[in-house]
Amino acid sequence: MATNNDKIQFRGEAEKEATQIVDQMRLGGINISELARQGLREKLQEALSDEEKITLHQRYKQDELSDEVAEILLGDAIGEIQREREAFEEASELDRTELFQQ
Image (tube, rainbow, N blue to C red; front, side, top):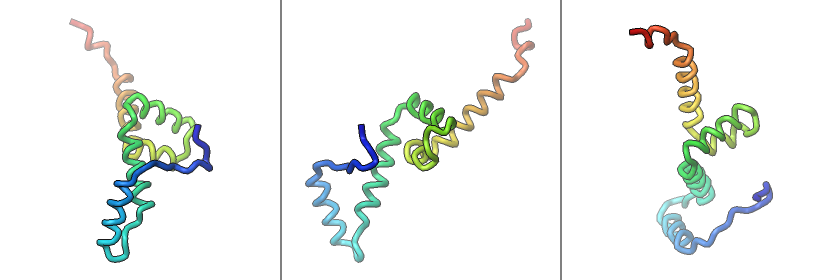
């Protein structure tokens, strides 16, 4: 299990060479650390199933995840899940007695 002191490392010779080439092409270079952070956020969000997103949202609502971590993992899905949950709750409260009458 990862801890706060663990570094994220991987073998990426081709990726390193590609970033060096782009870094050399741009005046002032590029912020490789920021690109890595953004890429990791995107891939974490893409890797999550809908069920996992719902579970994470529940943990977030129960204050088991910080705002920052929830934003990294769920991004815009935080608002979408909340809107869907509210719409479902509203729909479940509707008077359905007339729907079943013939």
